[in-house]
Length: 165
Image (tube, rainbow, N blue to C red; front, side, top):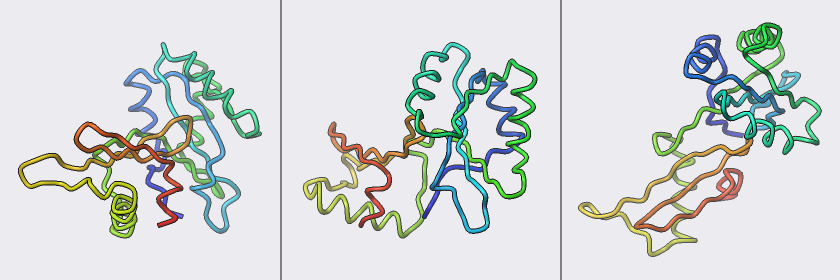
């Protein structure tokens, strides 16, 4: 299963904290699982003033026994985030970095997206001098979505749906 999100590194974590991220949600991330791993996790950062959104994200994970809210202002939590960023043996920890339209999917996923567009939006055709079809990768509470946009119209689907094509 293809995973478009980056591995959490110490540098990425420190950059996010420097940008004002204070709250970090950890959740189980099945898309990141590989053979011989104990677990894969996804970390998502929220700005200091986004605590209510972080709490909402955590509440949405009520069935995830690994869900946790870290406070980067708490030294013990920050230490645990640094351990996660070191990629301990048997674990992979990814970061939910927002990709948007800058995301460049692999060729076989580009073909899946073309097939989806032909089937669900046959009238959407990019023109050399006109509107272009834009495809963005977005994350919400750890779930990945594709947003297709063309000439003022949008279609958002779960990322998993594109894998059926």
